[in-house]
View (cartoon, rainbow, N blue to C red):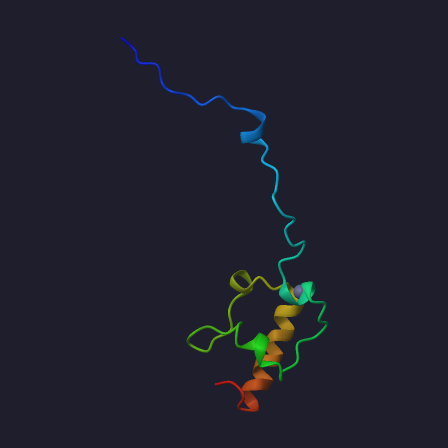
Length: 86
Ligand SMILES: [Zn+2]
Protein backbone atom coordinates (compact mmCIF):
# COMPACT_ATOMS: atom_id res chain seq x y z
CA UNK A 1 0.00 0.00 0.00
CA UNK A 2 1.44 3.29 -1.08
CA UNK A 3 1.07 6.40 0.96
CA UNK A 4 0.16 9.53 -0.80
CA UNK A 5 2.72 12.20 -0.15
CA UNK A 6 1.43 15.52 0.96
CA UNK A 7 2.11 18.05 -1.73
CA UNK A 8 1.52 21.75 -1.57
CA UNK A 9 -0.25 23.13 -4.53
CA UNK A 10 1.90 25.57 -6.38
CA UNK A 11 0.05 28.81 -6.77
CA UNK A 12 1.12 31.94 -8.53
CA UNK A 13 1.79 33.71 -5.23
CA UNK A 14 4.27 31.12 -3.94
CA UNK A 15 6.29 31.05 -7.14
CA UNK A 16 6.24 34.78 -7.89
CA UNK A 17 6.54 36.70 -4.66
CA UNK A 18 6.37 40.43 -4.93
CA UNK A 19 9.11 42.46 -3.29
CA UNK A 20 7.82 44.43 -0.35
CA UNK A 21 10.29 47.29 -0.81
CA UNK A 22 12.58 48.27 -3.60
CA UNK A 23 16.12 47.12 -2.97
CA UNK A 24 19.18 49.27 -3.52
CA UNK A 25 20.29 49.34 -7.10
CA UNK A 26 23.99 49.09 -6.24
CA UNK A 27 25.70 47.25 -3.45
CA UNK A 28 28.59 49.69 -3.11
CA UNK A 29 28.04 52.18 -0.29
CA UNK A 30 30.17 54.84 -1.97
CA UNK A 31 28.29 54.56 -5.25
CA UNK A 32 25.03 54.91 -3.35
CA UNK A 33 26.15 58.07 -1.56
CA UNK A 34 27.90 59.28 -4.75
CA UNK A 35 31.38 59.74 -3.34
CA UNK A 36 33.99 59.90 -6.12
CA UNK A 37 37.09 59.23 -4.03
CA UNK A 38 37.48 58.20 -0.41
CA UNK A 39 39.35 60.64 1.80
CA UNK A 40 41.87 59.32 4.32
CA UNK A 41 40.46 61.63 6.99
CA UNK A 42 36.93 60.25 7.12
CA UNK A 43 37.29 57.58 9.75
CA UNK A 44 33.56 56.98 9.72
CA UNK A 45 33.89 54.91 6.55
CA UNK A 46 37.37 53.49 7.06
CA UNK A 47 36.72 51.96 10.46
CA UNK A 48 33.75 50.01 9.09
CA UNK A 49 35.84 48.57 6.28
CA UNK A 50 38.56 47.25 8.58
CA UNK A 51 38.29 43.92 10.36
CA UNK A 52 39.14 43.09 13.94
CA UNK A 53 42.78 42.45 13.05
CA UNK A 54 43.21 45.76 11.28
CA UNK A 55 43.12 44.30 7.80
CA UNK A 56 41.06 45.72 5.00
CA UNK A 57 37.92 43.73 4.30
CA UNK A 58 37.69 42.10 0.90
CA UNK A 59 35.50 43.34 -1.89
CA UNK A 60 33.23 40.37 -1.42
CA UNK A 61 32.61 41.10 2.26
CA UNK A 62 32.41 44.88 2.12
CA UNK A 63 30.38 44.96 -1.10
CA UNK A 64 32.38 47.77 -2.65
CA UNK A 65 32.87 48.05 -6.38
CA UNK A 66 36.34 47.71 -7.90
CA UNK A 67 36.93 51.42 -8.34
CA UNK A 68 35.99 52.29 -4.78
CA UNK A 69 37.82 49.33 -3.28
CA UNK A 70 41.02 50.66 -4.85
CA UNK A 71 40.44 54.16 -3.50
CA UNK A 72 39.67 52.72 -0.04
CA UNK A 73 42.96 50.83 -0.17
CA UNK A 74 45.01 54.00 -0.84
CA UNK A 75 43.02 55.95 1.75
CA UNK A 76 43.68 53.27 4.35
CA UNK A 77 47.40 53.27 3.62
CA UNK A 78 47.49 57.06 3.98
CA UNK A 79 45.55 56.87 7.23
CA UNK A 80 48.02 54.32 8.57
CA UNK A 81 50.93 56.56 7.60
CA UNK A 82 49.36 59.47 9.46
CA UNK A 83 48.78 57.14 12.43
CA UNK A 84 45.03 57.59 12.31
CA UNK A 85 44.63 53.83 12.07
CA UNK A 86 46.83 51.04 13.33
ZN1 LIG B 1 31.45 52.07 -5.90
